[in-house]
Length: 148
Image (cartoon, rainbow, N blue to C red):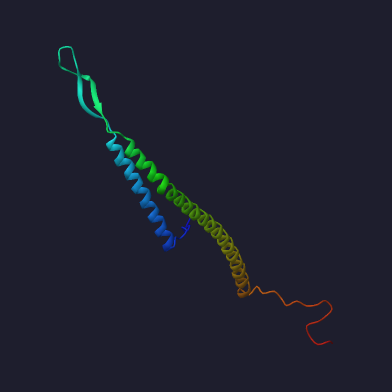
């Protein structure tokens, strides 16, 4: 089944590309920000004999508020709108795709009708050319020749 994909004009393509780049920038900020929020082992509790107790590590982590604030702010200021634009573009493409499917179905029906007409015309043409022509129609009571 050969279905055409809906086309995207240059302006739509540029908008979708810009939106995707913005969403990717935000995603990179989130992922990179998470690395800085990981706990870091800075030592271990001591056992009674003074040796390290590896089952009780001491951890530290930088204050996450700055990173979290930046990610949430970036999302609220930019990314939420970019995602809405992206969803709108995808919905528009889906609508066009559905319309293409409807148009293709109508075209297929029309083509099938033309094929049927063509087949019937070919059949009639073969009948006429094979010598099985019908006699001309005559009204009752009339003869073919002069009256005698």
